[in-house]
Length: 389
Image 1 (cartoon, rainbow, N blue to C red):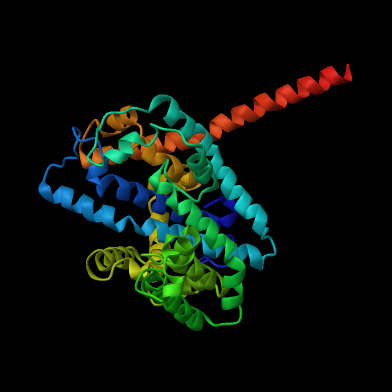
Image 2 (tube, one colour):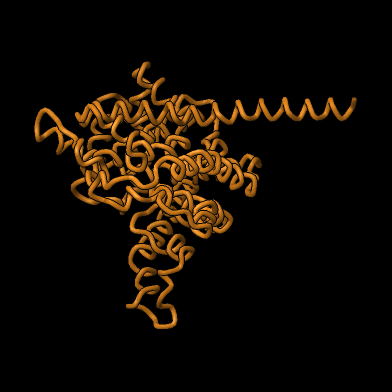
């Protein structure tokens, strides 16, 4: 998620997967995330401003795209695993510093939007069907505040659940490294598949009421749930990203597809459309660790051929972490802001407004801390000058 998890492998080949490609992938992921939260959860939107479309088919397509958008989590995890391994390979990985930077990014948004919530958005009316969303900031409790600050709870913004999962994925990287280091990509993919089966079907039963009595209740533990019970292959995608990085699989696939004549717009559109169809209607998130590489390769290929769109997605990718952290405040939690975003009601126009507002807010967060840094520097200089005098 942070800058240090970028894919930085470089070699003398037009098929290399560069830092710019990483930004594009993150840009695609954040667009999918915004589509997911806008188009798939009408019960969280302001009830008197329902989304509309010129046709019922338009709303159905939006809902399907929103469902497909959940793959954004797997994309972020894959990119994180890929980038973390390559930093290790280049001997640039500071494990503690990487987790620290992730927390700093989280806290920068936390200390702006959570206080705003308690100051200005408490006591709101029941403006949506999911009424719990309307009252998140009604009562301040210190234990809840500290748990959210640590990232082990996401009560102040339900979509922050991913933060804790990503921190745990980074924390387990040394274990993943030992597992994949001496294996081929084929063996590593088998390991990922087995791990996915375990965390989806075995560990949840083991830690629940259906497993061994001594282990029952483990599902109540946040750490156990995050490490061993997931309904989608997020941790497996992080693992898979590291395995792909080890053998530079994305670059190899690009070269082979190019040699086979399959690097062209028609093939790219067919691959992206096919991935959407398979994940939406055939096999869902269970195969994300296979779908994501296809989107990485062909999504960046298509964007490389649309100059203006590429620039837009690249800009979104650079702000993807902040956009992830701030966007749902403007859609779910802050009533007046949500009304502004949803005002035009047309599903596709609202999406454009939502992206623009989220991007502006993400840039605003960076701008706020730049100004704060300048002010603090001047204060320190003033104090230092006074002390010398």
